[in-house]
Image 1 (tube, rainbow over the protein chains, first blue to last red):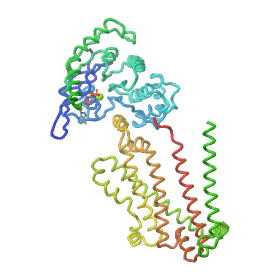
Image 2 (cartoon, each protein chain N blue to C red):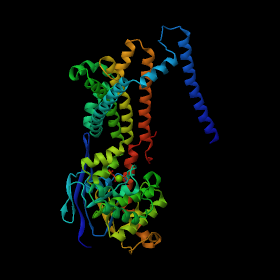
Image 3 (cartoon, rainbow over the protein chains, first blue to last red):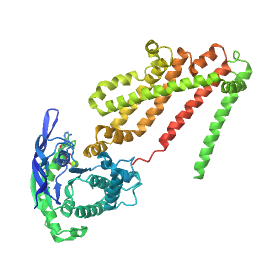
Image 4 (cartoon, chains in turn orange, green):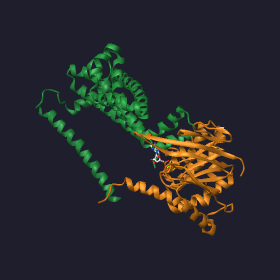
Length: 269
Length: 254
Ligand SMILES: Nc1ncnc2c1ncn2[C@@H]1O[C@H](COP(=O)(O)OP(=O)(O)OP(=O)(O)O)[C@@H](O)[C@H]1O
Ligand SMILES: [Mg+2]
């Protein structure tokens, strides 16, 4: 692989609640190469969002560094564009003005702003919806607005935390296809955090499997499926093999997480 | 839909009936002679007094004095209230430390501050503005602080991830996200600053509508007093519906 664009080195993040201290992320290191898609997968509560916030600069870490093209980052940085798991469009702004937001903040001149907004809305397939408000769109469309907005920021690395989690299955598949298309068109270096094994295999070049608590790197799986990819690949034999292989790694971690969750429930007789 | 329309026209009819019967009752009471002269003056006398008011240059001078006092007190009390509300709602520490004071001071009658305000600002418009501003400050601060806590946190994180400055966060995210509470605060703040200003004017002053009301009262010009009260009442309703309309121009929330 080419030289890494993103280098995550030995990130450790602990949370102190009262007297207890839990290590959410424990010495996580990996790199992402130019134009590569790396998926991070792990059971609920393993520290994925924590890692997302640290890499995006919204939270500090106790140890370790985040480096983009040789530069160590401190805080939110133009090199990283974040897409959030939750509904994150501004309800009071039109679609076009939502996408224009990062450009306004950066002081980009109006004509240039309009040009870029147009470009990214076309890319995510929302041409014609410029003057709509988010409330008038479906959930999948709103998430596309959020993705266009982050792309308009012009980041070196696109960082997404379960961007499809709030959507229904069919919308998720279609949006996955769309993201794949966009990523290929822009050769966008991407870090995708996900719950879904199929999504990880479909979209990424490598899949990083995390352990459950403390969140460590369990294994990184190379996905050697041909590119350009479409949703059709889901039917192929190799695809199934990758899914099975990753599930094998993930099963123990997921069941650990489930036991934890069950232990928190009130006991029956 | 037809049933809906019928319902609305029935409501309108009932409302008209309430107004009509109130007026009738009033007029009957006035004519009955049961009460002391002019305590309840005839509607015709009030209408006559209203006509007089409209032709009275003094009335307009007093009206504009009160309007200026209310406007300035709303601007001062409102902007300080918004600033304090942003601070209390934005910082957990500040909120927990200071909000109880505002919470308990809020409902106390502000008129107790009036003597102090007279000492500080004199008996002119200064003390009236101070009273209006104090009255307006509390609800605006509390509503803004509560609104701050309701803001969708992910929107704040979006702003931070795009490296918005503090100023940009305030103008591009906090204010638009707070548009409903801010409008509500404006409406409530307006109501209480009118109360604060008028109350102060009736206590000690030499101009303003409150002053005029007390003047009519001391001359036992009851029709004139009721005419003034009607004017104040209608103006308050007008401004209130104006502010509500401002809120009506809103885009839907998702
Ligand atoms: N602010 C916080 N204070 C204390 N503990 C926290 C905090 N944020 C996260 N944690 C804990 O850190 C662990 C990792 O949380 P995180 O949200 O990163 O998990 P996740 O992998 O994103 O889960 P999910 O898949 O459900 O989104 C969890 O045990 C969580 O309870
Ligand atoms: Mg998460």
